[in-house]
Length: 344
Ligand code: NAD
Ligand code: TYD
Image 1 (cartoon, helix red, strand yellow):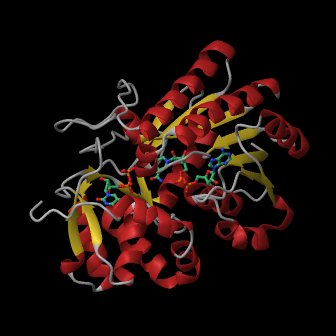
Image 2 (image 1 turned 180 degrees about the horizontal axis):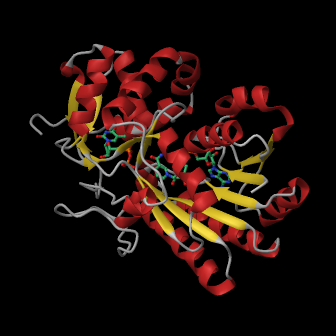
């Protein structure tokens, strides 16, 4: 691993990963390849550009553009691809799945094919716990479980996982896959629940909790995820998939309680609203396979939520311009006509 191509590196997790890798590995070169959709922002990497000089390079482009992908791989001398590039928000996938199918499935195919054509480059796919669908009872998803995605987003990501495995089996492409839980932390676009609720609360706007708020998620700090990917790149077994999460779960309402407590804001901001279509009630991962490689999370849910809240309090320069742009239209579309539930 000498030169990483980080696709989607200007997004939330990708930008945290680029910073982490450049800090940890002094000999590593990183090229970010990103289309800069609404979710991709060069501000997420401005400190990286300043701190790491020519060890870091940015190239704008679409992962669906095979010619441009091949050109950047050759130009930069890439030996390893880590693919974060995706459309990522479930609510947007419910309103309009098209870009999800295009980027998350076809784009992954283009990258796999480029890796193969360039001489079987090392390839790591960033996937999600959502590919398992919602999990009944006390079960924790194992990497060997069948995939049962239920939203257009999750189905697109599952399609990509199948393609990545197919390239390993058919062409011996040296792949690994990681399936992450709900990440939170710096630079997450405020459409996702934690940054949405923190920034709403800071503006004294209501927090729209879907349904009864008893859905269960594993809110993981983004740097724990980045460390895990770093480890898998170095020590993961080729052809294998690794779950990445704390292995614990909490309800959305419990998350909101901690968030409001950190901000010193009242529970009266909570509004139970009409539920998301097909809303998955519970995700929970078994993470023993990753722990056997020597990984464990540094942050509990509560530490992750409090650290994330503090970052948004301290970094209004980052999110205030976002909330005043395209976001306003999106917010009106998703929440404008949403029914408020009198009792959840
Ligand atoms: P994000 O939406 O913040 O960033 C996605 C990035 O991909 C953006 O920079 C965007 O510009 C770029 N992009 C989108 N379409 C592209 C295209 N066609 N070509 C090139 N670049 C393109 O997403 P994120 O939350 O950082 O998620 C990154 C990856 O991690 C995704 O693959 C996602 O499925 C996965 N994941 C996310 C979470 C989470 O909680 N956020 C959890 C598990 C897995
Ligand atoms: P989200 O951040 O969209 O991640 P995902 O759906 O990929 O898990 O949502 C996390 C949880 O929060 C999920 O159960 C849906 C819920 N949620 C709300 O209750 N209200 C909201 O406005 C949003 C965006 C999410």
